[in-house]
Amino acid sequence: MVPTSLLPTGAPVPAAWSRRAGAGPLDDLRASASLAAARGGVPALLALLWDDHDDDARRARPAPVAPASVLADGRQLAARADLVWRALASDQRDDDLSVVISVLHAAGFAVLADELADQRAGALRVPHPRRAAVPGSAPLGMTSHLLAMGRGHHLRVVSWHNTPPSRRDQLRAELAALQQRYRLWTLADLEAVTATGTWPDDPRPGLLPVFYEGYRASAEVAAPVCDELGITGWFGVCTGFVSCRPDQQELFARSHKVVLLPEDLAAPSAAMTWDQVGELAQRHVVFAHTASHAGIEETPTDADLEREVLAPATALRAATGQDAGVFAWLHGSPTGTSARHDAALRAAGYRHLVSATAVHRL
Image 1 (cartoon, rainbow, N blue to C red):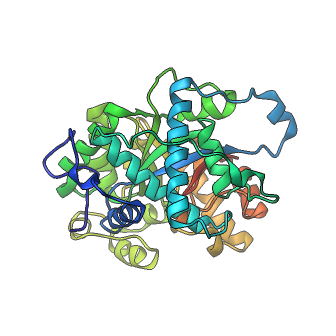
Image 2: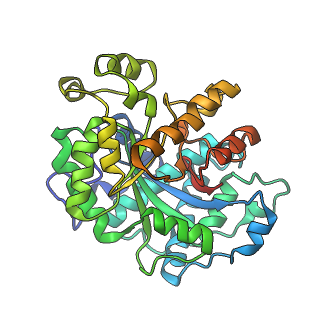
């Protein structure tokens, strides 16, 4: 059976989850992949990473110090991620980002499943950062992520790609369960931590609920559910999808790795309208997910960067009257892989990049 929900059937806030009995890292990796294939919410762990290009800016900000509860949470997450790494990928390169992503998704699923089921994984040994001493450890590799989490510099995240009306009750149950255990961060929370080192005054771990692509269902299902619960949703919009006429949106989706369901095709449009984007930004975080659902490898020229990086910032600013300053590439590419692309993001006014393994301060 392919799981389509973070929660067991019929139990919005489960007291126990028998599925966890005997589950290993490979089972957790498969479960996380099944959620992604079913367009469900996919749990992951994100390090908070920032490396200022401006030395003066780095010196001007105090070093972040996580509160004791967040520090303890980060150490537990680092321990679980290290166990997954040892079990599944101990012979892999530290700097293989594809492996790092898989490990953090498997660990993220396992931890969330345990916690939502009110179970504990038991006493986990906080890993000694043995790989940190290896000369030339990759700044974006497994070592840097484990160390960041061990310092409490981390966020939980659950990412959805579609929230059709038929899954509304399921989504509400998932978000309500998450809300009980985690503080769902706002943009102000993220800005405070990365700019001043000040964490929210809340002992719970931080979490981002992220909804990608700009589906009409994000505005008409996910956002109202978030409003009912009083939480801030994070909506990554592909501006080219929103700009398409409704009769062209199916072609756009098929051409740009956007999966449409029958419910999307039966609606007046598969994508949000620009009016909905503007209304959404009054209560939630709306950010750029490129124009045409593109990755770094698909944007080699200046014209590509103009279309996929600068134009979305301009379009969202015009629609919302504000600048969220957040960007995400397709496939969750991080900073540090292309200086040219990083410079384009900064020039467009983005302050944060959400990747598959980290939230980077630009």
